[in-house]
Length: 487
Image 1 (cartoon, rainbow, N blue to C red):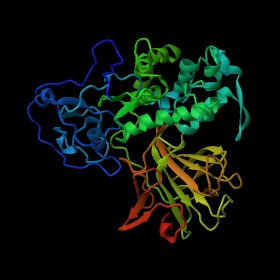
Image 2 (cartoon, rainbow, N blue to C red):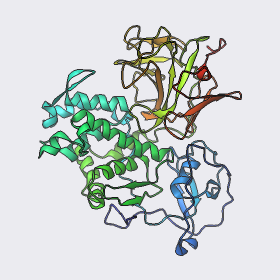
Image 3 (tube, rainbow, N blue to C red):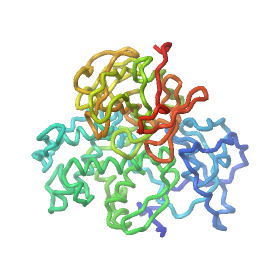
Image 4 (cartoon, helix red, strand yellow):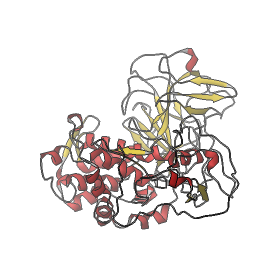
């Protein structure tokens, strides 16, 4: 069931439609297997005679993702500029796209991308200081966590933001908007036990609520980025197609509120730019667009990954056990790959070494995590950073260590996060945004190129005509070896 849903009372700023001369298409590429195009919608009679939409590209756009969002085929997207078939498009490139969609959400951009991910705009934000100054329920709240014991509410928010690379300002604003935790007090038992509004017993408490929330934000944000998401469905069963020219940040917030709103009417109230969450966010933290102006676009269209080696020592067999999947929580950016050292079952610490895929400085080390900052500025919100997860405490490289390509980082284990067996979970981010392993800037290591499967953890690595299929089964067919000539 579809609904006519607009989140602003004024006429929606839908894509501009003008009658322009025909432009010769520059590309004929088809979407990658990870971006399955739905059947092209049959235009209604009034749309058949409409001139094309003029769309100006945004940072992070690719042709396959745009085709999915606009409900067209890739070769129907026209431009006077040459366009990469699968790579990043230059921001503000004018495209002409057939008008195929009707009854979508508003096109209004409500929150910048840089306010959703833990971007350079939040480098100097002090979560603990803000919470204490606000003086609300969160400032005195504590919760017991398995990894850190009795932990303050502010520290929980800061840790969840850092681990998931989600902007701490956004998490605090959602906590206050939904549960009145930051500047006030929860108004009832539901707000106290389920402060982000997802009422399900297994998500009772601050940390479970935050973990659930970042999953929803990530599904919206990265699903839009990767062309995997085109509509949202509300708890009352109503669904709506997302306006194709929205930005990822707005989709992230829209997706979250669709999951916690009782119905589409309540969702519209939350999304209202004048009286809903966007206005609340600005009142709490100032103009997000002013901050975005100083840091966006988060990555340039000519972005390339530095040369990476495989994350283990040469002539040592490892197993490729997990194709592209969630960077931290289960859902969201399919940025991570898994490798297991083999030779043992369960969660024993392996004697094998995990190594640096490139030169950099260690900016985080603890609780199974090592974060390697490649630009060397000591901040994981800028430039390229590589996450190593499940690194054992014994032998793990300390914070501040400068590593060269191939230097030892530590031993794989089950420490940190969720793991059923000893392995390495590795992912990349750039300016705080997780980068899809099989995206426009693929996670290539020693020439091995990842390809996502139909489901998270499925997928392959390919090089020189050889393909390794990801599987946690421990078969010899999953063996991968870094060669001697690698650095």
